[in-house]
Image (cartoon, rainbow, N blue to C red; front, side, top):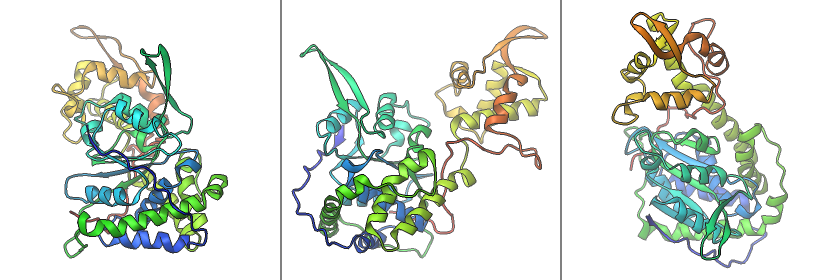
Length: 397
């Protein structure tokens, strides 16, 4: 593991009269010197997430922050550097085991560190094997009082490990849908020619940001009780409301233009995933299977034929699923979630296992219905990806 040990929380004197709105404005201005984010709403979301890390004991949900880019040099690592400088008790890692994270969080459950995982695509990317234990930790740790149980042989007893902690992940490509479902998602883009930012050097620029971090901590500590009792009016519902509630509570407590800006950011970043995002992995699979049946004008298709069509689609990710691409076993496991299973097909040349088009009809209608005007699929899945406006790309670094 390559990581830093979180610095113990500083003993600071609260300053009740500190202007929260002005303080958040300072954080935004400081970050804007070194990076260009894809939209104003993205900057609002990041600033509020950073501030919320300083009040994590007040929250019921520990919002995740996902920073992804389609390729290198889009500014994600620079953004992580700034977050690291400004968030509460940063625990930075580029490679980490789930057991190490369990210990780091559970060892300080009353004041957990902020987990920062850069290069997360090496763990969760399309070509990575995936760490299901770490993904489970990140998913479970979104809820307060979610614990992992581990047997302690030395004590012949169970260890109850807390998993509740704010977390930010950055990488190339999408993160798992279950993690993004609990996250504010920032889609980075390269800067346009002519867009300039100041270079960030930790030795030179770190001290002013550190002073800003301490002031954020003082403000949060002074307002901890109010933040804990906050029940902000939410412009969104369900899981998005859960993950945005801490950020909007911070904005309401800060005042000024921040309450209105926070709600607009919550709505825009949440709606963006439904308007412009690609489908989730399983929804994309359902769409691609429908396209395969349509292209073949078939009512039934052997598994081998369907896999060949999926793995040779240059626009789809299935060929990257291992050395042989998507396999029959993996396909069956993904479709089993929708109660779709292979059956014996009676075709010329003998019996073969495969899939009937009719078995997909109900699932297609529920998760990727066709547009009645165009005949093409439209996404309605609950978990969809967020894309910002593309008019103002972010910086390279």
